[in-house]
Amino acid sequence: MKIILFIFLALFSISFSVKGQDTIITVNGEILTGKIIEIGIKYVEFNRPSGLNASLPLLEVFMIKYANGTKEVFPGHLDTEIEAIGKSSTTDLYFKGKEDVEKYYSGTTPFCLGGISPVCLPILPIVILAYSSSNPNPSPKIVSDPTLMKNPDYMKGYKDQYRLKSVKKAALGSIIGTGAIFATYMTLIFVAATL
Image (cartoon, rainbow, N blue to C red):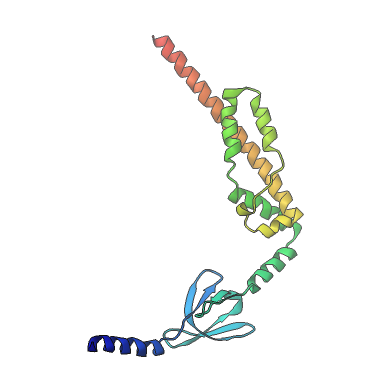
């Protein structure tokens, strides 16, 4: 009984010395713990678990999770990015759209359709090229920033590069499919000649 009472008193006394920890999540994903002292206009000041006070620029803070469970999101860095995007020149946005296609669009559908087209019908590559040059409708999941999809200059660059990449992939698939058929026919002719 004395041991249980001792454990209870020890845990009870420790609970008063443990302070609640707030969690700071930075824009680059770093997680910092400590007790928030002050949130100023430009800085967040907090007390680290080691006892040292530290400060962090507010633009580097994405969110603070307080010890009581509440969360506070700081979208200040998002506003500056949106302003920068709004001030970008039309050529920058056009090339950003082209760059996003190269980065996020693989073109596997036109490639596969081009690859099987020589097997199905010799005229099918023309249909596939027409399909590849159709208007793309990009998903917000496959672009670097979904807010850019509202900008006509960005979308023009995206669509132009999308069509070009789709046509190239369809043509490459068609060439590979034709080569595979030719190799198969040559193998069959060689096997038939040796029998």
